[in-house]
View (cartoon, rainbow, N blue to C red):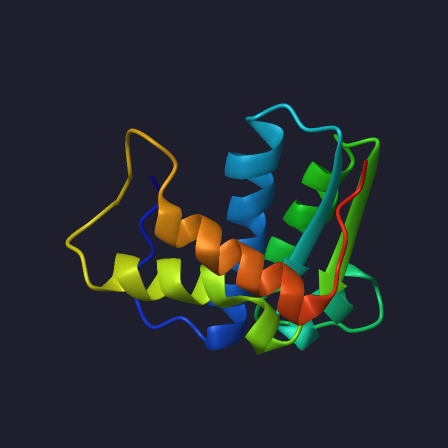
Length: 127
């Protein structure tokens, strides 16, 4: 677990979220083709090479380096309404006292939120 001290800008926090998704979820679980979605337009633009921000460029470069491990890695912007799962989990984790994990059966509430996200964004996954 990484611990960051001091105030972090929302943009840096969003960039760290993308890095966490790449490292923890996709890379460690062995995926080879991924689409990383997020509602932080500036970060998605930076990851796609059309923007640069001094406060998070190092994190962006780290994400791009990690992305080289995948045969296909796309960064896509989704509207906040199509990203309910991420917002709910982030809010839930902020209410706790440290790292949170859920064990056991797949949580029905998470499945419901994920299906709402898919319907709201109209996106399809890579096969």
